[in-house]
Length: 253
Ligand code: PEP
Image 1 (tube, protein in one colour):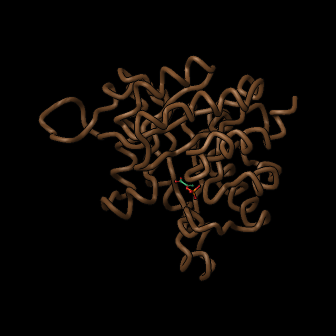
Image 2 (image 1 turned 30 degrees about the vertical axis):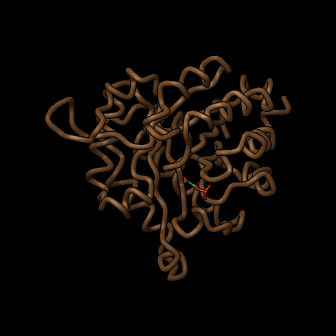
């Protein structure tokens, strides 16, 4: 995986209360020294961002938001601007998660604007792409993801940009692509980043996401060009999230 530092991020989705924040420090305690070889990121709901960021930082990790407005501060009730998220302690921000694309009609153009706003505020965007089951079964997965990447990565994207390949049909379903299919997709994404951004693109990390669990993490991390994982459900429990982190080969170094 070249010189890129592995990254494992947990997406808590719309789950979690203050009483669950101990999962952050518990995860980091269980992960132990792995935290110096792997960037570990917790993306709680916005209500918990500040406290999660403090707990993460105390254990050598970081926090991220799950979404961001493409707009600057202003009269946009209910939205959160990128500078607000950095002010709350976020270092990363997920953009274009398939649940937001589906629930909120987010297009590639909106996702690109969000990634741009995040980057301008110093947040590393974790930009999600992935095909539906119908697209996979009709042999269009590589082409769909290529189109999504072309349209949703903003011009002048920073090298901190992270791509998360998340097949829609693998999210929360317990199903995952074969190692060969993950390898083919990550090879394709890596090629696109290299072609568009050159040396700069070689620094961008590409994560796999979709039903990563302690039982399959090692196999997924062994796939060429997989720089880590975006973990949903399994990131909510310290025992599971730490087991996934410890399954990364860098954890043993
Ligand atoms: C996610 O929410 O990004 C995700 C990958 O979810 P899960 O791990 O639960 O499939």
